[in-house]
Length: 253
Image 1 (tube, rainbow, N blue to C red):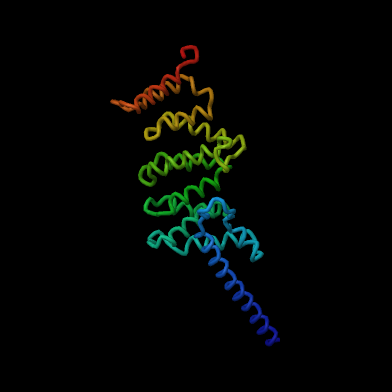
Image 2 (image 1 turned 45 degrees about the horizontal axis):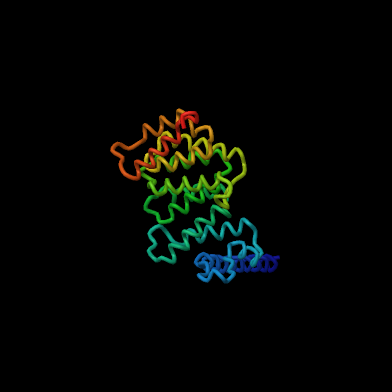
């Protein structure tokens, strides 16, 4: 009986060793893929490999693939200085948005909330991807737009671009046809149009694009008048003037 138990232990140990070795190989292959760039020769057909190629090659489950990606995201930290290692971490953090689940949000948020982490933008994009079909999307991006301690103006602008791509047909492959998602984003841009000071006219135009009735509304005219920077001159003033003229009621055009 003891001999059988001993043999069973040996077999189980070998399985774990083989699995661990296999996982090391998979993670190494994922890291290699993360560093591959598109070919400069546009006349040559080249398809970038993805984590799905690793999944297929090793015949692993979605859960195993996600675990491998998680390992790669933690191989290098926020203090990494090597450019290739930094790129590998950034790409793998992006992969969590595509191949991860909401269980990864807590980890991604720790990166996203750190303005000194070079993977902050990648983490924000992954959080948006994981939350885009849920009501939690808007609180997330609202925090990005309003919390000046954790998030830069550039990150806020990036969040706007992503949301626009999600809600405007033909603008981005990430477009979401779900009406609930589009309504949430449209309402959010109306909210931001009343407060945005860094990208006032951009947010104004997206708000009009997503909410056609807003274009000639008194609400828009009030927002533009209130948010216009004092002393605006030259081309910026001309552009702002054009937006204010566009906001006039149709009969006054």
